[in-house]
View (tube, rainbow, N blue to C red):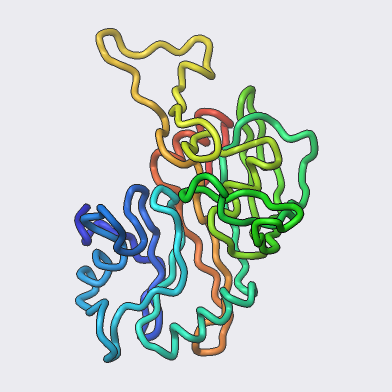
Length: 252
């Protein structure tokens, strides 16, 4: 992915907010050729290593196939200021998720401790009795729209644990519609949900979406200048098309 393709949502002397695309890890990891930190630094003409400012500094992370708002700091002071808010759960976070099935309620709160899965280092697990060293995790949620096989949910994580929304929604009985770790890896096809739909003759049907159906839609935080800021990330094309086709809802 070319660094110039990254969509900047906010960019000033202290911070930068980017609309993270799917398929790009937030930071360098094993087997990753490119990552968001490096690509964004190249696009902005800033270093991402060293101690001198300005340089691009990590504040928080999103999963590789999750899209949406990610913040980076340009100075060590800004990094400390923003990181403190994330660590103390004062950042207001709003996600959009397409989940399997239809919850029986229109809204609710999931209060379930999370810990590393005892048998799979890639996964997290609900740990109700904290026998695995689980830490408290809380997610509010509400249903935005319902379809035959799926629901569109807004999730508001009050804490910031690894894979929190993914694990909590699976614990609720409604995992992300596409999630290889906690639900199904099968992509969503329009033909599965529109009885009269037929792909163009001679062409193989392409999936509406074939990656995590999760988007970090909105962040509200206190900027290093002391003023509150809200940053909204437009939905990527695949998720926007899926929401429109499955739920008949147009979201920006």
